Length: 93
Image 1 (cartoon, rainbow, N blue to C red):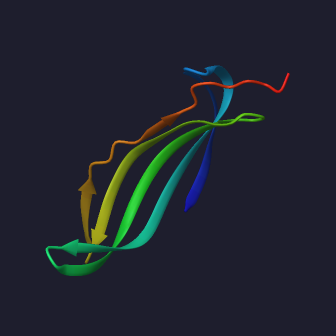
Image 2: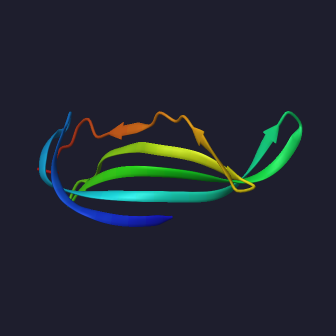
C-alpha cells in the first residue's frame, strides 16, 4: 500500500461537518488468482481510494476512485462501487 496525505479540507457527511479533515489517497496493489473459466491466472489487483480522517474521531469517509487488474502487461479496468461514510459520532461526555 502507498499512502499520501494530500492536506486538510472541509467535509460534510451525515455525522456532521468537519472543517479540517485530513484527505489521504491510497493505492493498494495485491497479487490475486483469477479464475478464467477454469484457467487460474496470477494477476495484480490495483485499487485507488480517497479517505478523510479527523483527529480524535477517525475515518470519516472512504471511497474507491478506480480499480484495475494487471495481467501480462495489460491493464483491465474493474467497475467497483465502494463508499463508506460515518453516520453518527458522540463524544464520551
